[in-house]
Image (cartoon, rainbow, N blue to C red; front, side, top):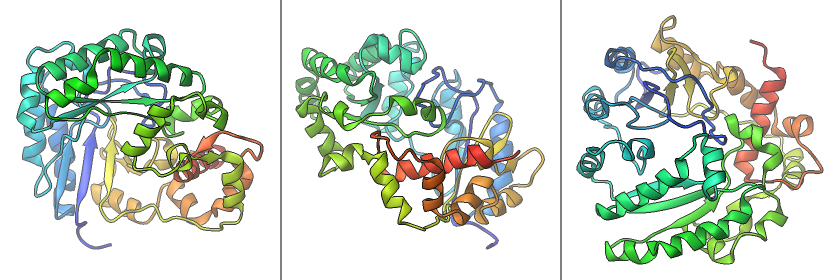
Length: 353
């Protein structure tokens, strides 16, 4: 291993998340408030091991803490060369509770913010894991528009909420979101897709979409989703039936080296370290920053030390498909997502802690 990586990104879970989303690939864990000194401690561990370092104080919900402004400043101070990005993420929870939040967001040069639905009120509250989430999303949409931002809606769809996509389409038309965004010089987008079948999402396996479910989605919404996701076919947008993917994988003996040149590491509130590949399960754990050196953790990452990384390198996907897959299933998966599903279920079956 070279003395330094070209770039390392570290994300410390300093507060947690107000939601308990049932699809969350990052999983659920207890919320804890860490100190700013903890972020400094973590960044110092990696500072001499990378030519560039990017530091984040979250990987579940941004701006969940009351000191979110100070943390953003600290992230920028601790990062060097490659500064943290804001992407198109905000905290709907904070937006509905903090009068100063919107004025602060205006300083970040982000024009469009994405909001996540799971259907209408009952389904969105259910999947978000928090009552009132749907109403807060609608309030967030109005606040963004009234302050010159462009909202974008996405919806995760499953067998039990697919019929509600037409209701959301009617709602956004009733709210005149397309015209209101055009009046601001932007474009309103609403698209649908499946989440990953990882972490909490693996629990939803029996609720996964089938080709019959796709017929229930309004054609207008399918077309706008294909444009947004840059897809040319329904297979590209929603995937293929599991039974077809198994046939493809049974003829494929490939393995995958998961280590990447520019590692991104997720560090939970107990300082356990996981690579940003998939779910935060023990089979991906690389170590703990209170007991292991950052150099050792990066070496483990580089050389596929975790059980999941070794399995991905050593066990052909054909073997995983034979052991784990359902050859009679019509559930739709993207090929890459299904490979992760096979790997995590293989690890769940054979991993011994």
